[in-house]
Image: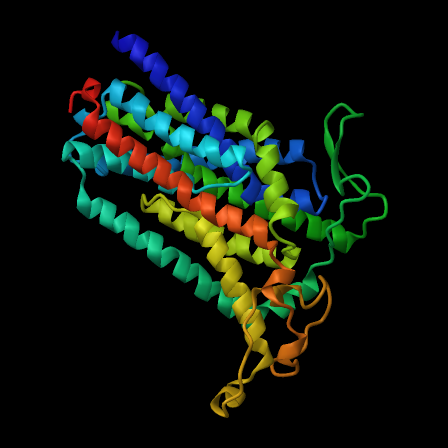
Length: 393
């Protein structure tokens, strides 16, 4: 019987990994796919590779946090309870993926594992408190760092970017398989500067894939690792293989949502947000904190727009009582490669509204599902472990 439960547990972990691949590929490569720089297949391949690198190098730190530290007694990670925990994580993420919304895998996983600990009286509140504190601090940090970049550095960065998103024609970067070895092939009319911009966008996606691997591999394998029945490396390999399958299949929906449906986010802004968010996620993973990439990236977008919009007013103008209309839509005030005016040169009326950047209905759906998915996992797991006798707690 234990062997059967172990097999079932691994199968459910594969299901979770499959949904993680579907949920995280969109945020990582949505801008590159939406700008028609690479295809969805290439995005899935790159995601699979860099997710594995992140999972194998830094990911074990987060696996230990969720599989060992979050509960005071790891004996509650029976194979029976693991199947239930992973079921709620995977099921909740599947709901988000089905809706085409990249939900927070870290919040969903921590919620289910914390529910098990709470129902059994074995939850380490100190560790949970540390995680929650970082969940509050990290988005605030992303907001302010992005705000500073938006006000003082965004125009300079924008001048360097030479690629504009388009849905017409073949992708700018493709793979040429005509020779003995595959090699990258760029659009015939692409300039060196445009090629550089394209490679930057793809490189940023790879960085985000790496960051996702450092944090999200634990969400699929931590409960099983907590039992001690399977080693870290085999579980990482299994989890990463499942993520790869999800990236090549169900991720197509989230790539559409993040690439074109939710926002007309300029590539300049996408690059800045990706670098800031990835840096924060990798830093937290290094100290064993599971981080929500989606929430951090969202706050970084808001902070970047806020910083960009404040460029209409100088500090002396603020002291004189001038009002500044703050809008995330300020990110669309200029095109990539265009020189931005100096601080104080623009009028507030020149700054677009946030509705020019975000699609209101899609944004509302994303925000709703990002709260619903972790709630489904946490509440469902707690009620199950607390009131269903079959689990023996």
